[in-house]
Length: 289
Image 1 (spheres, rainbow, N blue to C red):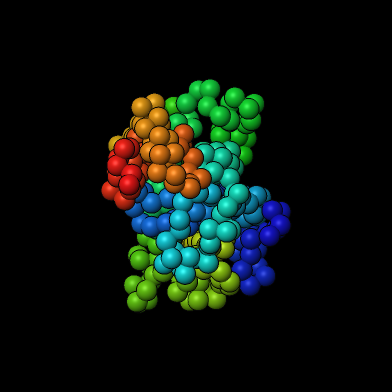
Image 2: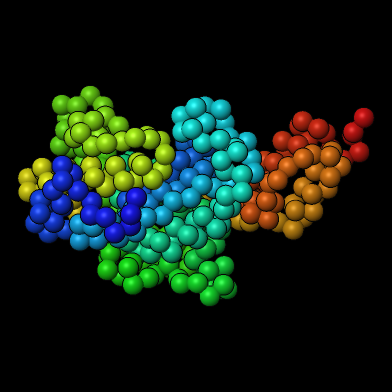
């Protein structure tokens, strides 16, 4: 999709249909499961909307070098072959931060996507001074675009944003619909959704859905369309320790395990789970038959 195309429904632009605009970044994640503390981001899709126009898009698959659950492949169509060679989680999330800046974030059930994103931003320490983006001389997340979009600004040890949720809005204004899932709401509004459960398609559909809901219900329920602080409480996880790195590499070497896992990107808890899993399956060092 062209970054400069005008976001429209039924060939009528947002600017023509709605008095006033809300600028935001609509985003969606595909993940390996529902738990931010255990599961991983597989794909990021994001759409920047300013003054009724799509002014940018960002999408990437994420290579964790770990198996993708069969049920997730069946749901999304994303395979391990597709993610092989894609950016790792650090690079993918850094790209999203540069793209979205401190914009208002829009999502369908946004606490889910925001929770995964916040956990990765903080655990990867991407907001600290001298982080990877700064070392490579790249633009900081707070860009000119971000200032115009008007979201919250984070400190070095937090990732706080203002957000809008189409699921919350739909539940309030469309009680007659049995299902408020994104695909059902898209069908209700006759918004094309070619590839449901792919991040970019879902992000674009969410933006279009927001504008339709806003057109129909903003005057009656103005508070529903005002950005609010996003909430996700988490305990910051420390990075893998030096001793864990050494022991994990020794276990992998001793048991001749073929893995492409990027050990340096693991958290302390993830490393512990991986070590425990190897010992449970193969035994400790010295226990090989």
